[in-house]
Length: 230
Image (cartoon, rainbow, N blue to C red; front, side):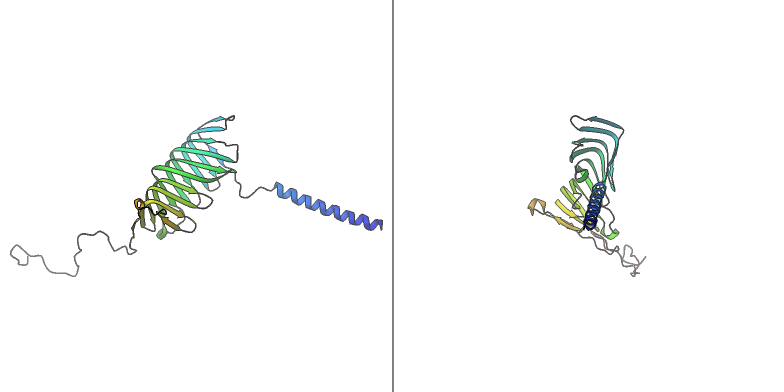
């Protein structure tokens, strides 16, 4: 009876140790969604008391496939889960999905990962990456907002947007990079009416042609001043 009790106790102890080992392994394993970001610049000026960091000259921030380049950047609350960044002069934001260029931008990081960015310029530029040539997507606007988690780009202020050569001109465009869905003038305001130009797929067709082309089969010779053939 005592031997049976000791064996049962040993089995329980071994099971408990196995469970504890598994729990410790899970705790030690890094979260695959969390990636460190690297930051380089010519000059860095940091105030650790206020958690404000200024970087100037060839600033480059990278995290996985995402990168942000500019000539100047300021980061606040860098030692928290919600840091804020501003970038100025020759800003270039690139992800696996999109490419943005602007004169200035702001970005928010949540728990160490970039969540959104807001680019401003005269204008700012956007292009989707990885699209087929006949479905190329690009645009320009005064403000371009990029939600990294949802893959949604919002363009506002004097928007020009192109999808596969077809062009939209309006006050606001919302584009889903992953679903390839676009909504132009979502507020339905008269001031933001949508102007659309559809490009024909036949490259031989020319739009806005004011001079008819001459039929190459027409062999009629030109006439002189008196109507006689020259």
